[in-house]
View (cartoon, rainbow, N blue to C red):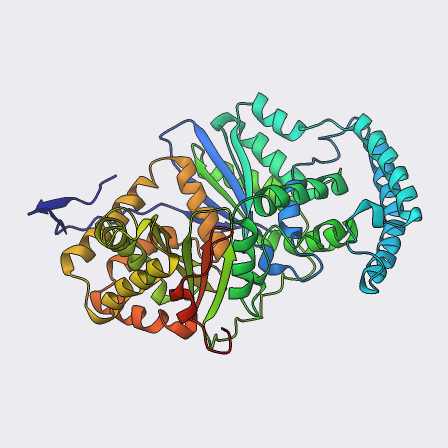
Length: 518
């Protein structure tokens, strides 16, 4: 592997005349059932990093079942008819009885929601507000849970992999994808094929309602109990007006406990069909052997009856600035979002370059606001190109003695420079060199390559692993000036201002609202 060389002249980074073009040798195949297979053969280390990405995330949900994509991330580790249970027949009997009782509980929950709408109770989630029949059914359900625990083999999926030398097993869910991955010894590739295809072919959603409660607790810990979690959720919901990105990946509090197993089965049948999944292998294997093995194991999964539907709801064009003022247990700060562009859009590359020009400790925001005017202690900038839409985020934390409003105005001043002055060639080239170096480092071992392929394929185009850097290198100073003027407008932004509890809004804040709002 040859890395691009950089010569330092007078402290400025300039490219060597021979630009390196690091490419990952990816081979793409399609199995008989429509599942796609990406293979990267690397014999540098005796391991295989394997994973698969289901092209489904929170943007594929609807109101009433928000959080279901993330719930499936949890459920896919519950096992199969042969993994995770001592008595599969009894297991199924218990699951069926749990569903019968849950159907009755849902009827009671309808009554409770009607009571809430009538003002008879203040919160449907409070135990004291549940109906007597619901509490009786809950006791029966808890008895079934205890019976199920007697036949469960807890975490057997993980134990099998760990015993075989597997490491790093994990998964994640985003707005656009759900990915599963692990690294195994090269001689355990067939075990990986059997395990992963098995949980797709015959998943058993044991402890469905208990795991649903685990997800609800995760939401409480990550969102409700953190200083900025619930505010960030509200801010993003305010920012996305019509798009499914409007709701959080983890789901709304009222939806998570209401999701039924029947809804989960329907969701799984649509979005976990072979045509909606890509299997990825990176590591020490023989191409022909891996392909035949994939067909043997993954190819046995029946194709879905219909393709997964596209997300068709587009974000409406924002016509007025949005503002949110919040008091939180955090340092005073300002966070700004602009609507930008989705993954693969031609302007995404220029916006990504701008984020590097503005961010990091050598970027313009840190130099201007932290080291220069000293109104801030921290700054950030990021282009987030999601599958269906994107946003650009900048912000800063106010230094003691300064206000978030002062930080906000300094941030705008830095953006105005980008709108009126072209970025000097030396500064632009330095950022491009950093991009190239980072891309090279990501190709150092199996797991980073796998993670990139999972991410890029989940967004819609795995080839970006080889093509993105060239597009970054092609960005010009004129491109940066153009996108800065096009996207960083007042009517295209939403601003969140955070102050500590008990702090009065500053005079600057009052100046930013209309007389009617005052």
